[in-house]
Image (cartoon, rainbow, N blue to C red):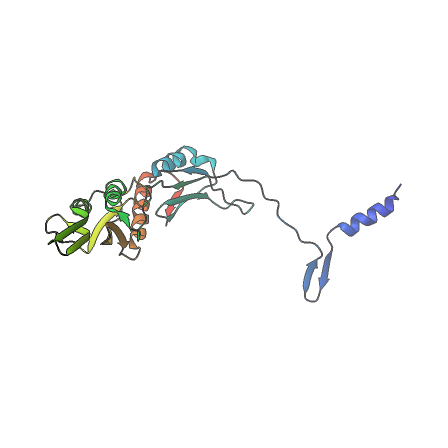
Length: 233
């Protein structure tokens, strides 16, 4: 059986020791804060859903709430700093959007389908659909035989049905941010080759700033009467 004084000696040695020196106060042990477990953030896919959650559960969280627009497809909500130096992150929204590969060649048929399904209606979108609809990918073989020799002529590649002027740059509105806001316009370079078409971005990414501004404008309008909620970009 262990002696009581021996046990007390071991306990005192295990306790943190504070040492005063000319260069400051030191301890022989490091302390870590024991943080409480915060609930996981609720994921939403629309701005309207995010607004409804904020309005209904606003009083559940530390005031104020900050709605941060982190990208054209993400909005994050977090609370004020708590006494334990943690912030609650109750909700966030991530847009669900149709996928499109820029700088990638599609068949003419697939490009027409993509333009109708993944781009908002604009004058240039309709122009491209009509332009691509007038393209035929041909391969023809003509032979000539005079009984002595035979010649063969092969024609292949993209041809236009009728004479059509192709714009090098078009202005389009791809679905690239939440569908509740206006989709920002961007300029694209259209390229055709070997029975395929591709769109190349030509605006330097400026559309991202416009998309985030559009999100901010909508959220501020819908949350203007909600106390202690701030939208930041």
